Amino acid sequence: MTADATLPGVLVASGHWDPEPWALPFRADPGRPVMVWPKVTDPAAIHYVLAWAPPPEAFLGLPNLKAIFSLGAGVDHILGKAALPNVPVVRIVDPDLTMRMTEWVVLQVLLHHRRQLAYLRQQAAHRWEEIGQPVARDVRVGLMGLGELGQASARVLRSLGFDVAGWSRTPRTVPGVTCFSGTDGLEPFLARTDILVVLLPATPETRGILNRALFAKLPRDGALGGAVLINAGRGALQVEADIVEALETGALIGASLDVFEKEPLPSESPLWSRPDVVITPHVAATSDAAVLADGIRRAILDFEAGKPLSNLIDPKRGY
Amino acid sequence: MTADATLPGVLVASGHWDPEPWALPFRADPGRPVMVWPKVTDPAAIHYVLAWAPPPEAFLGLPNLKAIFSLGAGVDHILGKAALPNVPVVRIVDPDLTMRMTEWVVLQVLLHHRRQLAYLRQQAAHRWEEIGQPVARDVRVGLMGLGELGQASARVLRSLGFDVAGWSRTPRTVPGVTCFSGTDGLEPFLARTDILVVLLPATPETRGILNRALFAKLPRDGALGGAVLINAGRGALQVEADIVEALETGALIGASLDVFEKEPLPSESPLWSRPDVVITPHVAATSDAAVLADGIRRAILDFEAGKPLSNLIDPKRGY
Image (cartoon, rainbow over all chains, first blue to last red; front, side):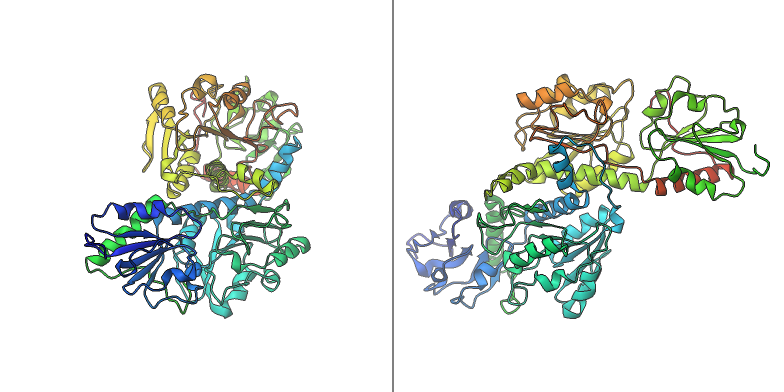
């Protein structure tokens, strides 16, 4: 520890993100060593790492490490590392992040439900023509993933009148939402889903789950005339070649994707040019460093005051 | 009355809309004469007119007329007629219609808030680039019109975290919504509005209210970097030349319009080609004849059972 350090130190390892907004609130704590990877001047002083897609070495040689804090909602960017030390990993649960995700999900659901892409094409042709659309209660939205994010989206989608169901790995009860779970629940869940909203974490179990076999289980005779895929979870969940094929064959009639197998999405991907696909560059729920770093600092101060850490992830489960 | 008629008769005068879906539920009432304008075979049998943009003559020569039912949320298409008889005019208050309008308003607010038009342009150029956006609580939505439709939109917009205010002709109290009213309240309401959502009826007072002078009162320094106009009320409210000018000068940074001075919007209108404008062909809250006609029939059966009519409009006020 440096001579005047009286508080446990923080290391920011933020991958390609600017580390400074994350370091800033901690620099205001008198006596708190704050380092930015790879400049680890005093490894023994570091009790906490704030990490986003960190290099595997970032966690090595820190003898006093107490906890790792993920800078986003997902933790696959941390759990994937071979050299993960045996300390608690804390994920962010932040109202701002949840609200932003809810906005994006609701926007994309409404955009497909209200045929906005078709109306924009008509507008480009100066064409005035009504396109039929069902009432929301006849449209079945299915949420894969019923954590904080899934439940928040479910609430607003229900208030808009949609017929909402959800699927999760382990059984859940969410008011007003028809809940399915586990391997057995997946098929009946998909069979009643017109708009599939995916908010799952990337784990060994979920990798590539959005594939041809899954799309084939979605109904083609729903109120929208086919099924729509909306993925704001993780790119690793989806097989993009299968999405393109499903759009070609009619297994899907539209998609909104915020995440991709490879990010940035390569310029040659056929997804970019499809008129039935909306692409956003992984911005559905962007971490606002100023707000989130303050939240992590508060969690650390609570921890230092003797309270247990909350929002711990289970490394075996993967989220 | 025809020989076997035992119930008061219905006349459907539905302008350019197909009259049959509106006539259908009444044809199922035994002994109910049902006529479709202009084939008025027995004027004395008619107690009710179901009207959408009716010709002025539609109400003439009906000695036993008891009430007029509007087939849409607005009633300006009826009240504008010179020869309006002195009978109650009933407007539609239908949950389906309210939900559809709410969907459209929420979609358009989110579309501008989340910069979806800019992202679609980036997508067309295969460009992966984050566009900054404020959190919803920093975005001030202002609803002009706080009736059924305005209040329903306010509820969902609040649940998404927006800072919602409303303006109405006469004072209203809506939970969670900062309420302004009357001529004095208009300027302070506009001064705190980043996204202006207009759900007003067309009345002599509101015609042309969305003009250069009003746009000049919207802030240019809000969280979105300017003001957005969303009009799903009536085309008569807006001066389209002023909207185009406001978009050119920066008094507005975007607009979503479902209604127009002249409908269909003429092909030569400069609005069609603007990248900052979303145009939909008066479909925000389309009347679903099957559902709405049933509702009108139920209102008529209640009236015939001695109950007073509800949702009456005040011809002097205009809505």
